[in-house]
Length: 436
Image 1 (cartoon, rainbow, N blue to C red):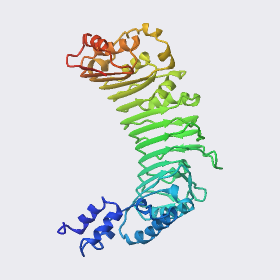
Image 2 (image 1 turned 45 degrees about the vertical axis):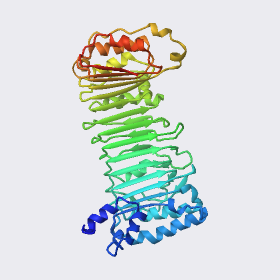
Image 3 (image 1 turned 180 degrees about the vertical axis):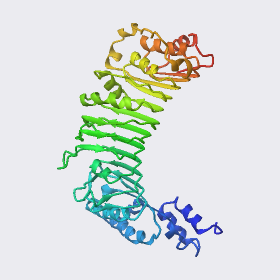
Image 4 (image 1 turned 60 degrees about the vertical axis):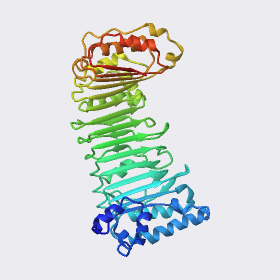
């Protein structure tokens, strides 16, 4: 290995934690200072917490380690810091000082604060770097921007990748300083503006965005009233909006959409605009609709189903099977190749089975995709009702190019059910049936 150029050796060392790459200085004279040229600084405080040290000594030991090591890296471009913020108490502010230091000097920054559930407040005095490309922040962190001038001190013109898995930040203000952002993943576990004076009116996504993942993992939050996704270059969209109450949404045409997933709580305000978003996704190739989104569509006063001209894969999850809506969707997906249906039974499904005697009426015309394109069909959570059995039979008989059908039941598999499905004449001679 000593015959390799220094650049290649440094590249190899960049895949190791920093303390491990520093240990290679003992190998030989050539390796003594080689670690200083590694462009990745990957630090965590796990090694500081031992039985011999108190928590306080471990905290200061790690801070001393940072002060001693970081300045020695002359070419660092990527900085990853993982620490146990919950053990630091008041000392955690010094860690944020290090982030303020790093954010102005690196191309990629990843901060992960393993917490004990307590929120930690970061009040950055300066957030500006013309060459920062990637930023990841994770943990119970509240980023308070009240001391920043949005026009001067919050500006990342080169930032392409932003991932936030934190408790709070004024997302609209943060994004205003990232005009060229292409990937955004924002997850808020306790997102609320309830405890802060500033209440933004909207969240506006950068125009250049190509991938958006916005998730609220909480039940009660105060969010802006408007959500603006005016991003014509968008290719991937995942919205999981369960806690907030967005009154309006701004969308546009998404000609490059490849993948979309919607999990939106059926609040009255959401019911009003979900169909509008649904129409805007008509060019997508993959679409997943969670049961909450289906409830929004079913409750909409007027529902116009778009023609999903490029859709290849469809995943639909129901709170109680809705065969009529599903057939209507299939009529608007002429190129669909893979269909996954998931059903969560309602309370009536558990305690009242009389409805099982009612099947469904077959549509007057067969959806084009069932005849010519659908080759894979899965049904999760089958409760073995008449309506479900009729629909499964319909797909099995009308699917002329079907290759695989997989049925997963809530209850243990009954041999007679598999035998009954096996005896149904199939539209496709190459269809393989699996019941689990």
